[in-house]
Image (cartoon, rainbow, N blue to C red; front, side, top):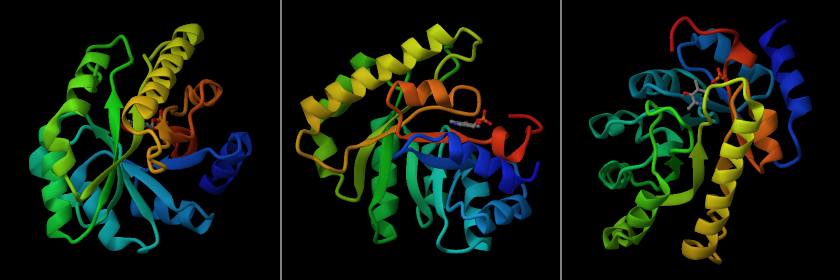
Length: 223
Ligand SMILES: *Cc1c(COP(=O)(O)O)cnc(C)c1O
């Protein structure tokens, strides 16, 4: 199966209104070009310098998404290029994104990453921390960022019921957050959940953005 075939197979499984982020982390430029030729314009990376290099090399109409853990000292590498950051869960990181966006004369869109999985190793905000985060007065001063939704990862397990219930939880938090903090704000609408192994379950729970890597590009070496 070619990358183009894989892309087509996946697109046929996407529900209406669901956007596909092709996760190209660790994969070579040639693989991304192949997907681009097949019409894919949104790509996800999880290493800032890798995103920077690829963005500088590849066509300018590609939308680059940062999907992995982001350290503040690396925001500068992606600030000129990134279209959406999926992985914000600390105010200090968001302040740095705002600062770098301003330096680049742009507004950067971000998602709040929620911790919904059982594994401690996964990053993100708990419900309580989300409340504190959204209540912080300094949030309003960040004029060069736009919070446009939420992202979450389910536990890595074969237990589909568990995965479904975690995605359902995130959908509930998303709806409540929209109602309580972003009412009337039409920008807050992205719910990024679902990867190769669980994107169908995620769509059943109301995801409108899926992040798919190995089903498109094949297995990765180590990540
Ligand atoms: C790697 C990664 C993906 C894609 O995972 P696959 O299982 O290869 O589809 C999605 N989201 C995040 C946050 C990732 O780090």
